[in-house]
Image (cartoon, rainbow, N blue to C red; front, side, top):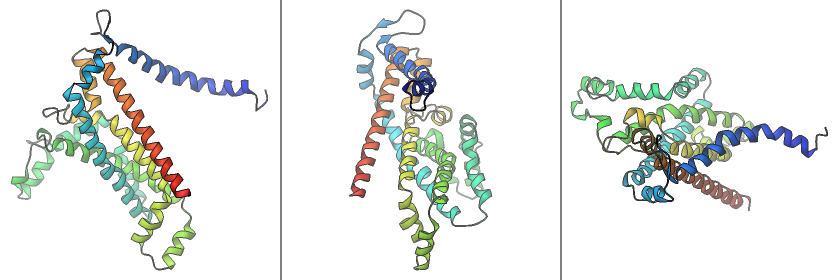
Length: 292
């Protein structure tokens, strides 16, 4: 078989296409079909047309869940991506930082449910470490019901997410910094530029593509966020931490509205695709402006 044979290319690509079709396309088509029905999982599905989608657009909890996930994404862009970038810049400019890198990356390797349970205990108002520490330091007035306060629950989840994933983005940026040409950096230092100026004016602009990928990962990962919200607050209090994924799961497994939950899943998929396409379009337009 010739390397340029079309049949050879098809043979090599076919396994990946089949796996993708079986694992992604077929479930999405099935979900799209279920979204047009009313089904509780036991009786025969009843065709409902676009009624589930119409209901979703008038569902206040579902609409507000996108506001919550938007807040979460914006917050995690700072506590995950930006903080990870700063951590990477600090660690890459100092020697013998192998242990801190490993220590900061460990939370990424832990099961998300375990982390959520542990941090739920930390925020517990009765026996939690956070309130106990504030009490021992004399700040009793600052003790809160952290995950039971509608104003504090969502920021608390954002902080936990930052604790988990800042090490992940630190590793990405650290790998990008390691690939930078040293002659440019050394030239800047010889010209009198300090480490802070070298970092923000030279290193960061040179890894612009990596930064864009990290931002896209943070946005798409935030849209898919589920574990922390479901385990730590289960969408409460008063639905103030409800996100599309948790509401979708509740609709299917708690309320047994599989058709409606499927419609929510389809809408969430469409939103994710639109966000990714818009982000990619903006990125390409900026690249074109830089080239010209």
